[in-house]
Length: 461
Picture 1 (cartoon, rainbow, N blue to C red):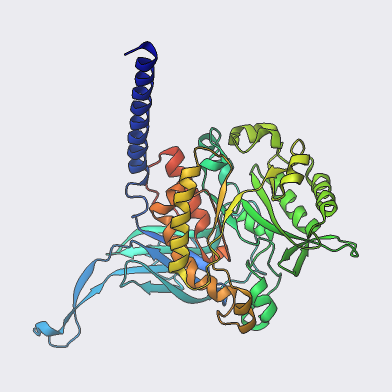
Picture 2: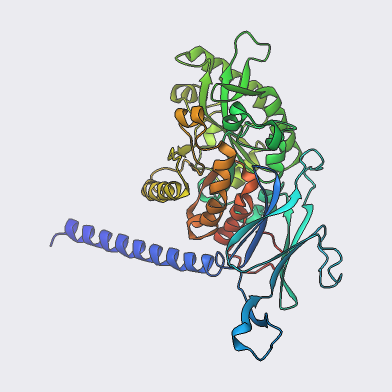
């Protein structure tokens, strides 16, 4: 055996050993991080997209059966039935209902299944809700009482500073390492909208969110999926669109984003993937829009020379905290020294018929992403929503985006709350307030990066 052959064998042995140890360490870490986390009791409160009612959602609640007698004859064994003494109570503060003798309770729900969802009679009023970057909890708390003990409580809350609060464990990581909560068609909302009385064929398939951009950011969203229309004859030439439907002037959207970034230390990703009106085969319009973005964000945009491979800490050190992704290679090349990153890799299933097919797609594409991960630090976004086709809109066969989201979002939440969430990067959803995607992302980041195993009984999942 010559020297070169021996050197080659030694190299491959070292490589094999390193790979084995890395995989073993990864598996150990994975087990450490995920052990009991996604199986623990979880309760969260959401806003139903169909009617704005508050929904109570829960996973993995241990039920404790008690033997009761439904007959006046207590000696009759056939009259005995099993019931549970597991109840969720809703209040407007954190006080223990047991201490208040339940006088502070305005809704109660007895559980007979470990996983489920129940709509309440309570309605969320977006107009009456006071929300700013100091908001921690909405005035809505849950308390899980079992055998006369409170075993879990938390609130429906905002997450305006979650990245900064985790700064010490995020600073050495890259965007690709994090679980980033996002919204699909982020600017497709309508102020003062009541879906129970104002919905029509256009709004049914054009609105994808229920609150404005500032509210989304305060609630913890950090990835904004924005579609742009160009209207040459308007004073406001660039608009946020959903398809051909014009939604809001981009100047208004951008102001909300800048106001939020000015008030916090958070990092926000803007991703421009579609240009449905006014851009077709018009390079000069893309040029004009790229310059408009520079005018709007020159003091905010992260330098693309840092690249997607940069750490969160280096982004904070740069002083600029808005990453602008753009889905047009030539334009990005031309402006890669000033403000434009290559866009996020969006993963679309274009699934319209039910959650099962959506989950199947998400799991299949995750395998492809895993194979690409070592070669590319560019983030990927799983678009976790159903997508109607043109004929579905015309016939209204699916009942609209609200009904489609209502049929899937509980399942999407459960999917990412489970093991599947560990390797998530960016997840964008419709009507995110009917999911728990923000809190799930925050908790997975804590578990993966901080290796925290402490169980906070008063945390809201």
